[in-house]
Image (cartoon, rainbow, N blue to C red; front, top):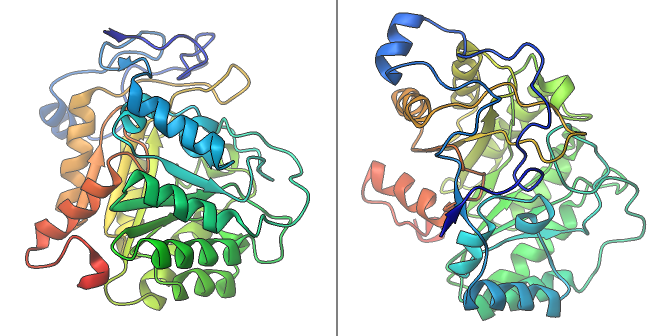
Length: 340
């Protein structure tokens, strides 16, 4: 049965957002032709934000495996609305380096504070064991931000990639990395381990970054993605994503796309911001499925290999399919980029 997840689970606003607009700014004639009408204001409950309650034997198996191996997933820690679907299909995004983040971004549900202690040296092995048990052909590894570590956690990413390669040599590895505070050496260490996809999310537009992303800089994100393209192997794919509904304009969405393509980003994800708790940033408005389709069209015109755009899209949602579609669009390249 399809149900609407209750307040707090995916983040309906607890109060009407200040200054909410019924539509985003932009060239109205072209925009309205593409989208076919105005979107709902943020105070509504759009019918397209319906997900199935998590459950079923496969969901239980994944949850039990994560608990048995003492592993964390961004699916659970960030209250992802797709956890039921993904876990029911035996897929998950592993979150290494603990469950406490040193940053307090205004949109994120992950616990923040002082993690303390060195990284768990056995965690890469346990991640690889989980990948083998689940039979994953494409795995996503992310982390909390660890600004308390000198390398920002780069060595842990490299060790995890290597452990998965050793245990599951046919599995493609995607990493969703923090910005490492701009440390080029940390990025090189991750790239040297040979991920298939290097992902770092821009999250929002330049104007809103200081309010949305704690201790992050828009320019530093774009620079990191450009460096990954320049320093990685020729077959490496780069990826980024952003949320809508935080108060950005239509023109700012297009500016994000232009900046990411300028950095050579291959794959783009666009999803709806959903307020995790009343303490997080207010939701300004919902985008309609037609608007997400229009954003995808804009991305493809700009040359992205693939764009996943929709209300419930998250960075690692259907990640294996994103990678395969990106390769098919250009033809003749293997979906497993390590064999390209």
